[in-house]
Image (cartoon, rainbow, N blue to C red; front, side, top):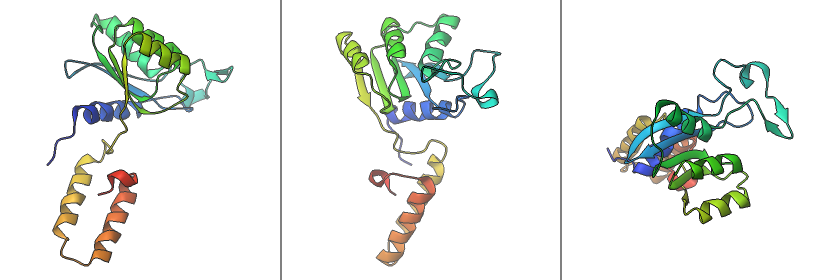
Length: 188
């Protein structure tokens, strides 16, 4: 079995954390990494012990859910709560950070931001990251972390079927891609 890259590994972790989100508007996950070790993680949700958006709906003011603490902020706060240094760390986020999270990321000494998807990429946030010397890189998720082993099995199975007719193989590949919702560039 082929190992996934570090970037894909950590990005997959952020997508897994995203599945814990309690905000109905946009689920986001974030992982803070230092020296190839995860030191904190967060997802967007309500304050501890508070009402969740999934229970009572989002509390929207000026187009933003004010009930939700963003994933990046939750991860940074987790480091603060447990006394874990963030200086020189990297953060993997499912979506490009908002302006407020960007400022917190810079202040925390994070040296790189890896994001899976563009999301209202604020020009001022981009400018601040550049001024602070924080590297940014889009790292689209190449495989579904919840079905990685199944995808590997299907790839192996399809490899064994290579002697079959090309039309049948292409049909199997299409069905496998649909099953795992893979984009064209990562089709099995």
